[in-house]
Length: 441
Length: 170
Image 1 (cartoon, rainbow over the protein chains, first blue to last red):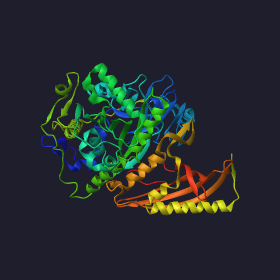
Image 2 (image 1 turned 180 degrees about the horizontal axis):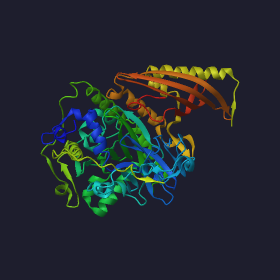
Image 3 (image 1 turned 45 degrees about the horizontal axis):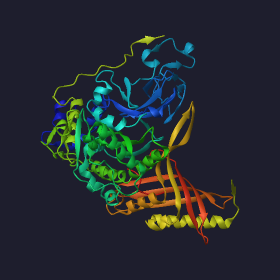
Image 4 (image 1 turned 30 degrees about the horizontal axis):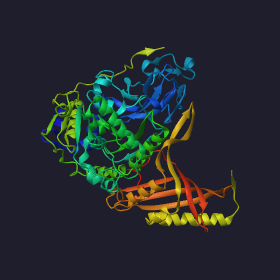
């Protein structure tokens, strides 16, 4: 299973049918790790996590653990957390501050630029060291926007801005609301779910249809309003998408906080300066940046999360709460508490998603369960440019109702492109990134 | 300032309070479980990071929590867990709590500070998971002789939670 044509046969977007196999097959997963996670801009964390030189945190790009560190001159870099000698982890912390990374195996030492600066008994024991072995493997490109740090193993390909493309117009409405931008609350929610990474990604990308049933309890208890079709699901290109519910997501009377009133005021301000159609987009809603960075911009809080793949049938979730830097401590606390109540592993809404998704992956275990197709037909043929509805500065395409599977199809359209399966051509062998034949003294 | 207490009476009363709590939780008598807590309750289960200062690694409590509750929000969580359309608790999880009282101190306001080990084994169809850690409670004596829990901080031993999430209480 490596022929692009075979993969193309598994995804029929014209009829809205996708083969169950792509959510469980080991070979397809390995190809994803190369073609998608090896060449996309992947979210690493927020600059507010590493304000000073020497600050670092660890995270994953695909299944590769990386150290993200701010160097002495302030520049942020990322490295594979694996000694260039023979592979031991050079960092075992989640976060911290350091001048150097020491390997506990043989004592090789790297500075915060990833360069090998210490080798015990080097003069006696080594005449030459292969160039490959004189630095930690560096993530090809690291760039930030709104303080969000992204990394890409690939040194070629679109810039971060071009990769985000038309989605930037909408992300700007989420991140640029107040002077000083956003910061993350200290700490990350981390938990595992036995599900393929694409299932939560496509869900957050625009699955409003599941809200009334999966989250029936949360709605009944008043933590959000009953779901209507008032709103729009928008695909912004490159697999990025979101759903904007009129009035904002997570409205509801139960345990309301002052943060809600604050968002309402924000909305009034933006609508007054830019036009009434912006009412639809403050807050922006719930969405996904391809491949696996989901966000929630709601009436009660903002959150970012990564669905980190651990094999085809498991993920580890990393979830952050974001607040505007300029907010008062009381409003920051309110947003943090509201986020924890609704999302994160104990969250009223998160609890039920996990249960439902896990059951999907269980059905894919058996031979019959992995045959056949999933249905993504909703809203086929009912998409049109957003500019027709909201004005020419609004990019992307939308469905005519909030509930649609147009965003899911947009996700897989981009998936096919990256898997080199959209034209049925064979991909070229990727050139090795470092030549081990070079040698330095 | 807290001081050790030699009062075996106090230990016995606390053991009794905690055993009763286990019975209530295991039998899903959550409304009665809520009644064990003060109306000005602070209930927190912080996330924990492994932090490095140079080569020295330590566990640090973070601002973000798995539970960050007052009496009202904890009551809302109970309502959620008991709701018939909470799929994560249909059927209700079987929970088995093992609580061990480790240390009892009193402060000058006659509040009791209790430290307990806990081991919670949760079973439900298709899922078994285990939680363990330490609970730090501050208890106040009510009229009569029983205690109410005014403050609880739960320190979990495992920083990344296992499967699917939390629909149980510590």
